[in-house]
Length: 410
Image 1 (cartoon, one colour):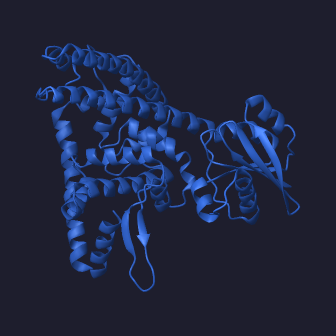
Image 2: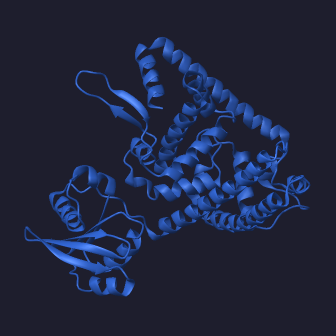
Image 3: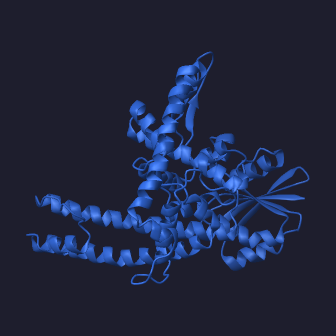
């Protein structure tokens, strides 16, 4: 068996081959598709390829995998931490990858399947569109601020807000800036609607999305973003592993006889999924339920921003249990869930039922008495959570210590 390590760049890869305990430089290979395919056909069925995770890793793996026994993807951050050196060249990097894999010390990265990879691309595309639209909106707001125009009290980028914007006294060059940015906003908004439609159609075919949406505060966008990051939940043996994957676990410092210090979260992981969980945590802070009680408890001790991150961490734990056990969230609100699913169907392009009779729990959610009944049930669960925590702290010194540690970890 040969171990073939590739130090990948944009247009080429430096290769090193470890065979029978001997390491040799194998030169450079071109990463243009036809030439990479020609290289792949020279490989042996029992060869193992080692490659660092880069922007074009998945494309390279798809070309090489049918011709070799295994393709191993290395975590570049951990490789640098293990094999740090003052002398660094492409040849040395390729040799280090081969040696680490042969010795069993190579930190590997999971390779997502094609469906998960496609889902990640769509989620990333949506993130970029939202980011571009936010920059344009901020630019328009800055023009208004620079011209001493007070903020619009309603939704600025609604139909009424746009009419108000066009009526403001601005210099001609400033008006051109706003018109140009507003036109770009319209174009990006149309693209975002198409991406959302595509995500909604995929979400309706994914049963795990419905399970995650049983959590109050989690909509289809959050659910799809989290699933795109996770892939197969069974690759995480515990909820702590999933929390770490999202970068929501705290940094820990300990030396000598001093106690361990828990710092801020590591933020080493899937950044977009982490931001989606934090966004859901802010929604949860305003909705009745045990999670809001948890948010308020942490907020009163450490502030609302720490509470949002702590609630996001709690969400990650709940998501692990929901997906691993294939169960709905315990404090689900059925009518609210059906209402969210109906909104998802409309976003996916399903026909509207206006003018006809609404059926099922989605229509029931329009009934104020149904909404109030569900909120009362969940509010009772929230009160029960508060009483449980209060009793736990009073009766158990260990519980009080654990609660303090929980706040520190957040």
